[in-house]
Amino acid sequence: MRFMSLSLAFIEQIAEERIKDAQEKGAFDNLPGRGKPLAPDGGANVPEELRMAWRVLKNAGCLPPELEAEREIRTARDLLAGMTDENERYRQIQRLNLMIAKLNEGRRRPVCLEMDQVYYEKIVTRVPVNDARREKEAK
Image 1 (spheres, helix red, strand yellow):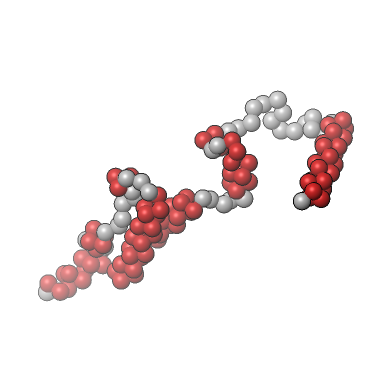
Image 2 (spheres, rainbow, N blue to C red; image 1 turned 45 degrees about the horizontal axis):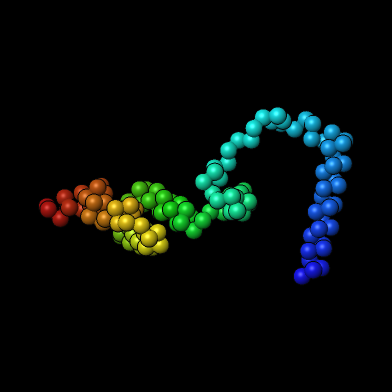
């Protein structure tokens, strides 16, 4: 444990020396945005002790599980909008509703703030394939 803290202190010392050398050589003089405030990165609502980890994860393209689930739900809804096969739409709706139920369960929020599920009847009535099938069955 002591060895680890000594090696980190040594690395920190080397980094500081390299930064000072670069400053003396003027390596930081012509950087874009010099003298201007940094653009906000959206981490203002993140507690200060978590900001560095949040920024690293954000820059790496990682999302918290809840946001990842929301992104998957949006993708599933987009796929659903383009489907014409009724059986495939039904399977996609079942999958989508399961994803929404899992997301709502994990949030621990009041029911009024939960994400709405997709209902099969609403979609079946809007699919043009069903209208053609009903016309054939009516004849």
